[in-house]
Image (cartoon, rainbow, N blue to C red; front, side, top):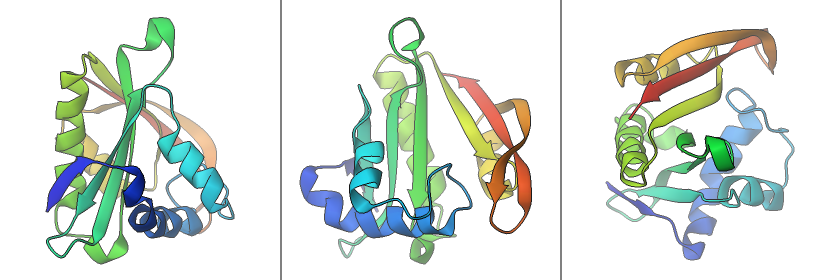
Amino acid sequence: MDIRVATQEDWPGLWPVIEEVVRQGETYCWSVDATEEQCRAWWTGKAGGTVFVAVDDDGAVAGTAELHPNQPAAGSHVANAGFMVASHASGRGLGRALAAHVIEAAAGQGFTAMQFNAVVSSNKHAIRLWESLGFEVLAVIPQAFNHPVHGLVGLNVMHRSL
């Protein structure tokens, strides 16, 4: 598995991973019918952002992450990030590998902390991963996410120092 900064040429491989996650509607506050152009702008267009791609040994894109300042200007020392893993790559430790890579990149870019603003409370796998990597839940915003299966669930705000 190779994790590296994504290039423009990686988009055709990134799009199926992103589309799969977005269409499921279970982990991101995006419209499930968002267009490819909207998703590309949101994933790759954040000011000060870096997009990463995880590529299998056969060259197939297995996951992606994006890292950017959580807020501009006076809040730009705190990072924010997003992660997506293709279903065909699930259960192989890719999420943990992407997370470790992005945390290291964030520290290397001078961020002093990382904050997640909206970890869906029913996404127990992600919450366990983040807690195992030193994140803590600072707050849960009740009924802030309309999950397609579970209905209204909370959104966790999570944080860790770098």
